Image (cartoon, rainbow, N blue to C red; front, side, top):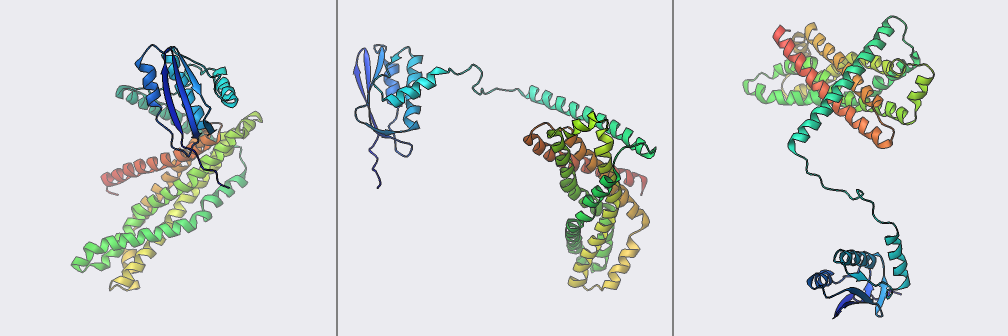
Length: 379
């Protein structure tokens, strides 16, 4: 059986020095309520009122909505120095209001809007950048010591961890590398055909795709994929170990976390990234062949012949070297953010996000610098 809501209403009776407020109807969240500003205006208009009293004879059902309005009214009356008599309110409302007034609001709990100057914002950004640079230098130094210990045969880690990391960032990444590289090859072929077909030079699409994939796009797209896939995984793994105090336990047992946890992950990416780069180059060439052979008057033999003539060992070496550098940067960003992670679940999420962003920024900067150097050296 549905109960009809009675309309909420509020009546103000001015009987100085008392201000009587008559509350009627149902005060529920789904009911339209009268505007309380009229009552507040009465309190602010005249100083002849010394006390506010209530009449709730016609009050029906009520919920937290009425409580909110009453608390607002009582607080405003206190600001004006007017006392409020709550004894005429229902017992339930009196009890809740007593609970509200029992524990006063602590100073400083309310969020305050701070106006920060642009100079302070720039200064804070500079300090954050300086802290990140210092942390990066410290992490690279510790990692260098671990790599040196590895080549001296004194690094302490489990070889099964190295093979497992190679499996995770190598063969397990082949499906996504295959898909993205094929699509990149398709895109390069279509983009190149727009201009080359104007001159009847569709055969040179093979040169464009081959050189583009081997020198630049193969390694770069592989690095971006691995940054979003592997760097995030490294940060999440190490961050979770920080939350669970596992890294502290390793240090207590005499293990160096840099050697035991970070070094296998870095070595795995260094070993795997060049191979993934070669595989991405192959998939990109195949993607270009699908476009060139099927949409233009170029045979598969002509396409492969032009590709072999266009790609030299130097081009492959440049792409492989870049991808190896990208692998170091990806492992560095993922492991560094994971080791810097805090002690909560939200910090793990922040570390994972930061690892991906840091890895992509490192990749883009390193690729730009290496491309400029190769151009200046004529490589």
